[in-house]
Amino acid sequence: MENKLNAKNSGVPLTRRDFIKTTAAAAAYLASGNFAYGFAAAETIRVGLIGCGGRGTGAAKDCVESSASIEIVALGDVFADRVTQCKENLRKSIGDHFKATDDRCFVGFDAYKNVLASDIDLVILATPPGFRPIHLQAAIEAGKHVFMEKPVAVDPAGVRAVIASADLAKQKSLAIVAGTQRRHQLGYLEAMKRIHAGAIGDIVSAQVYWNQGGLWMHARQPGWTDMEWQLRNWLYFTWLSGDHIVEQHIHNIDVANWALQAHPVKAVGVGGRQVRVDPAYGHIFDHFALEFEYPNGARVLSMCRQIDGTATRVNEYLIGTKGTADPSSWIKAAKPWRLEVETPPNPYVQEHTDLIASIRKGQPLNEGRQVAESTLSAIMGREAAYTGQAITWEEILNADLDITPKNFSFGPMPVPPVAVPGVTKLSRTA
Image (tube, rainbow, N blue to C red; front, top):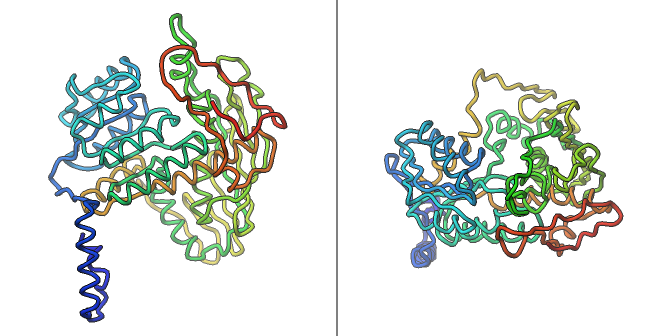
């Protein structure tokens, strides 16, 4: 409240006209009910978790580690065994900070609604990304602060919904922090501060990579419906994960957007499914290589791969008119720089530290639009590879592409065909 009312606090005398305008604005702001309430340092912040898999459980631990007076008070997941595993894990790992009694542990597709109704202040959204737009909208409408894992959507329709929720959160003074932890990582923060101040001149090119081996896969079990099989193997279905360029490589694409202070305006590239061809791996690709064009004319090479036995490379590299940089740790230029911190803060904890601090101050962070744009950048790259076409930002932002099922239930769920460049169209629905 103080920051909003003291806009004229610059040493210039406050005139009567200024006073009247400021007082009127303050009255309207208070009447709107859209201001944030801060939390005292010792006041407990009650947290609910939606999505009780490994990442959700880890995020709950990170949240507790980030600040004092945090309690995990509600859990929700589609599967009962996930809730049970999460509950046992958190009881052992965070002790008295775990307060989720059995009557606040919920199962099913509507579990998120029950978590949001459980007298919580903050919710962690860690389900497969295909559910993120729905859960974020419900959380903001319910008046909850949000930590949400990335990516935040799998299609343009979802991205548009996330942007709308981010705007609503801003109106309601609610925090949204995303799981793009590099934005909270010391090395990146220090490098970007220097890069944006001109340390390497104008960025003209960059390369971003997430190349690694394969990931887990759960063999289909007797009695599993199509829906359960896909949910338990959510990485391999585009409606759930967005494909690995969106689910994983978004981290590196987000760094490019951050460095260039813009989103790409066009993408063209290739991708395919060369090794993970068994239907057990759903229908996603196992490799992508894209060129992103940015508003200043810079070209960014984007490459990602999940194939066993291949070389691992996960990093970003920036080329400017006056130098180069690995934005995680060093700059080579007229004034070289290297991060020299023996044990920097854990960025997975730091993102929660920053979130909680902003809530306690009543100055909530809102990263919703930022992560939505990075998500859409990755989706644009995926669609350029899927369709074999050059895709522009305006085309992808406004595309009639909605691959999220209209109804969720355990039963039949046909698997879409593997994308074929030159055949697959941008305009399609689930």
